Picture 1 (tube, helix red, strand yellow):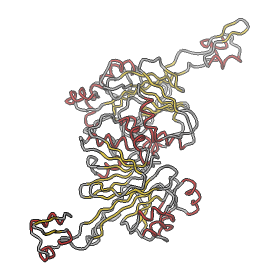
Picture 2 (spheres, helix red, strand yellow; picture 1 turned 30 degrees about the vertical axis):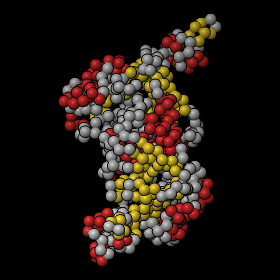
Picture 3 (tube, helix red, strand yellow; picture 1 turned 45 degrees about the vertical axis):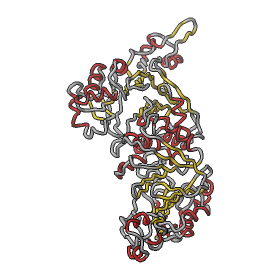
Picture 4 (cartoon, chains in turn orange, yellow; picture 1 turned 60 degrees about the vertical axis):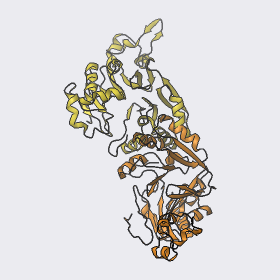
Length: 297
Length: 297
């Protein structure tokens, strides 16, 4: 439940003109406004499941997006039930200046291109249909002028080859690899809440730069509670981060009874040292490995 | 729209074990928690109309009430459309431990007893079905021991007569006025938003102790805008307060463009001196005229 100093769990990701919001509990639009981020430019909203704390802010947010004068289609993604539930919530938004497209997911789809991101979903274990999400931002290989010249690629084809096209001209086939360097590691993020630990999460979070994971309960004594309510302890989340070889773990979605999550963070750090306690409006800039700039937590 | 330091318009009223919430925009439960008021004891929620800023917080609030373990029926009141719209919003609350009863109003019903309050609705003019509400807390006449003795009322009937019963015993009819003093003025409140000024408001707010009224626009230059969007200026609200002979006016529901409403409050005060600018978590204790205690604004 939202507390005065700790709002509901939500995550917004943007890069190169694509903005994606994951989960939208009550008040998400208020804290988003505090950040000063644009509402108009949200391309897609991904909902993990239909418990109120993950979706109750949707109608208000959608109305506010409507007030910006946006006309581009808004895409909603979520597990089955999305159309029925979102349409119910959006009873109070009968006249929007844009269309809404609903995409119901099973967790077994092929990865999807959403703007600049490649997104995939993973089935979680929370009693009701619930999905985690992984976002990848692929990185283009470097353009190598010398290689292009060495391969005698005509200058006017460089830009199209760099974008990935294969071109035949005067009987010669030119391929992107004739002007590009080695594949380069992109950026990735995985967001999993609410759930018990399941092996699919380890796959979905494999090698991610940032793994945002629920840690409903801090103390390991609460494990039976976590089991009963289909949540996780800090240690369980840390085990997933370790197995996935994630770079960094943010714990979030704390029980209201967990008043000072930092005091139990050591539980996670013993297993996965690069663990942090999520807090409202926590921001991280992810950079390609050879481009370092971190605004910190 | 909710702003970081100015949330949506809502009003909670309680007396003698009855708690009534009027309007429930997004975030209402968060600010209510800041006040420390009980969720469990909300008896009824009255919605003025179905624009998002007046109802989008309903599903989250109802879920939170559900988490308190309450089992008593929750009563929802609002203009026509309530059942469809609230049921839509409550798609995310499929398993509540209490029943919800929907009461669709026309603005033309007889006054209704709701706990200790007498409530009535008034038709507003906002383009869609919209109601204002008046709450009266009637005050019992004083019990006069000397009068009861003078009228030779048997002692054992005193308490029932005091509660309003008429009793026949041994051929004598005993009426409440045989033990009670003069009628006493109760307490009253009127809440009207969103609307253009209409004569019904003057009736509904007649002689109220507190008149909470929308003042979407401060400056009188915005009157044509107020007319177009079916809202009011500060002066229009003040004219209503004056005509109704209300004791005190709180202006609320300011346009996001009205950043410093206090700077234009003089517009209202020129017409109705006892005008105040509403702000988040503003509280007033209303007391019977001979019982003075005011915690101030």
